[in-house]
Length: 331
Image 1 (cartoon, rainbow, N blue to C red):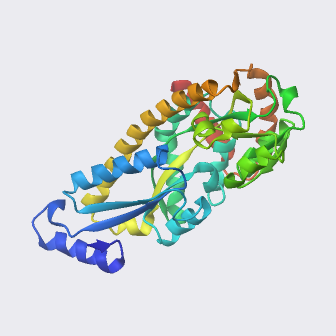
Image 2: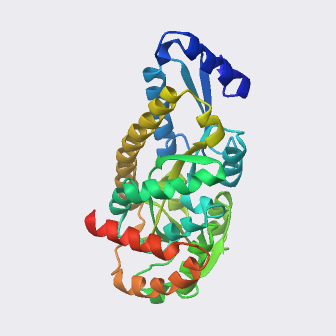
Image 3: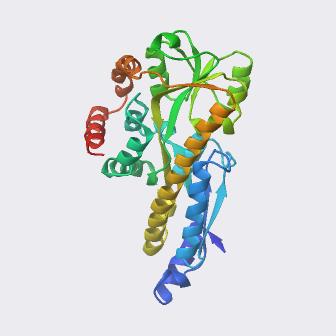
């Protein structure tokens, strides 16, 4: 079976041209996909479903190999591998894409969405499609937005009002948007590699982290925190992207099948992720962590002050905000 090299794809394309119509007689194609999360994550659920659909609908001619848990590199490396054609596809966070697609910074605006269902509805529509098109000039093709991670604050002290955030040493995603949002809220925003956070919390290097409910238990943070505040400051986005050069080298009918399979797999994964969120929050409570639901209005009023600084580096940021807000009112 060939991999998606130029030579292999050339043979596969020639086979289709010479054989009877249909994918069934095309020579085999292997796709290598990567992500950084665990085998129980929404990333893995979506890729497993995509693998199944791709095999079924091409009569076994497309084989998908999945490298999870960072086996193919961190998200920065995965993005570079997509752009250079080293890997066929990957799931990466929208925040990681900000480094190469500056307009993606709008997705790191605090309270850009009211909740993750709203974010999903907007990004599964025309706004999301147009944002994915921003990847094309950079050698990537977006097949869809995946799970939205509603990020709340897991901490060693209760968070009920913005005053409780003052001076809080909190680990945030390594993105300018997240750093600025939490700085404006009065915290000591501390970017840090995810693998270092558990020990940092345990040893008091940081007091808190912003994280989704499913990951609090899955990654054992319930062992070192006492409080979880549903602040909903960010709805962290994820993108299923493929290498543009490698994807375009596939036969047109295979491309069409894989695009449809990706959309269906994402919908399957979104439902699974919703269940993980509910189960995760229940597990947080069951482990004795105090869950609070603060009034969000005061948090929003302060967080909005970060918009100018975050959008300063997004060339078309204001127009994207307008489009997102218009879509929210219709969602």
